[in-house]
Length: 193
Length: 193
DNA sequence: ATGACAATCTTGACAATGTAAAGATGCGTG
DNA sequence: CACGCATCTTTACATTGTCAAGATTGTCAT
Image (cartoon, rainbow over all chains, first blue to last red; front, side, top):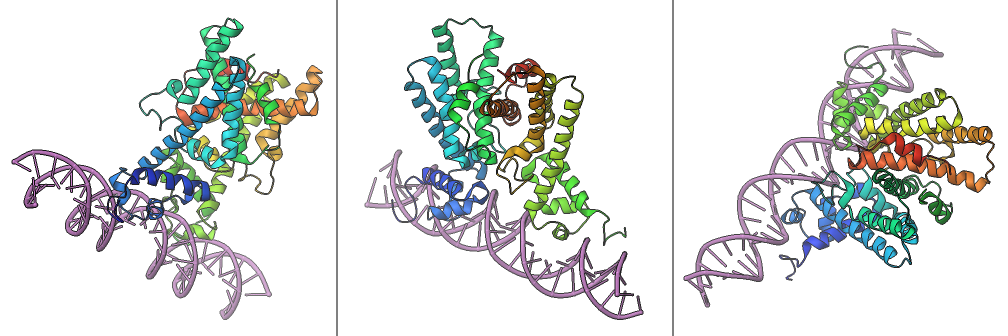
């Protein structure tokens, strides 16, 4: 780890610095040169680790998504049954982004929701947060012994996802309705009907 | 309308050119200089009409939002009763953006949902599409003679909005689930329960 | 140990872009 | 008709993404 050359782990340092910049001043003020400067490295140094700016951004998104997924995973693990697991997921889904609105904008604004996770897949099936939801939903079906057609199941899943995602979107992107009782809202919106 | 000076209506021409660029190659390739070039005007000419790039973008958003609002308005007018008005609004909400995904990204990505409509208000109350929904919902309450508390009403409204907006978001931003039966999906998701 | 090699980082350059300043142009108004 | 104002051009500059060439350093075969 000499002072200049061979920074140690510049790649991760760049990712962290980039995320920090976004949380401080938003994505619009994210520049490769600033990120490099924040790591005390020349403006072209990032090109040893990322093909271009977009590739750094993808890496940053992957990092944030991982934090997000961990939050949801913990929420599911702490739930006593499948129904409350779904509710807790929804609550944490919304709250995660309400606490860090810049993360929502960063992840879901202007880019493909799941492109940064699996660029070759056309379906959300593998998007980790959705996988969590699917599993909890399947468990719910078993626990409640409710019978649903495949189509109904897909609709339920999409509706739950859309409700949580839509609430997060409205809250994070508009500054609107921050005073609402999210817990009640969610428990109502996420109900499987 | 001499060949150079005094274009005629450069302001509107810039807005239209900007929207065209976005639909052709996405917002990331929108530059003031390209917009100016598309209007056969020097690169600094826009500064006679817009303070900066953001102000042009705001004007473009206002223009797109107006188209959007007109679509929803027409959908409401064509509906026989309040319940179908709400369903049709939802359907048109989603379809409008599915037909022009770049519009969704443009309007709702990275920026405040309603900032470009009313920058001084903190609530969505005046956002035209939401006003349409509120009116239809009030009418629905009357028609069905259903009694709901103020809080329940707010929840219903937000849930309907979130469902439509969330579906549009998921569809436009992810390329996911384009094959689903939106009509069924919506009529289920928008049901007031 | 030593020299080659690859990975990493620096320096220097360039084009695209947003923006500011100063000047040119032409329309309407007194 | 002269003047002023809105509109547009020209010129200039800082920021940014990117590339190419070169410097530095750890690693590894010999």
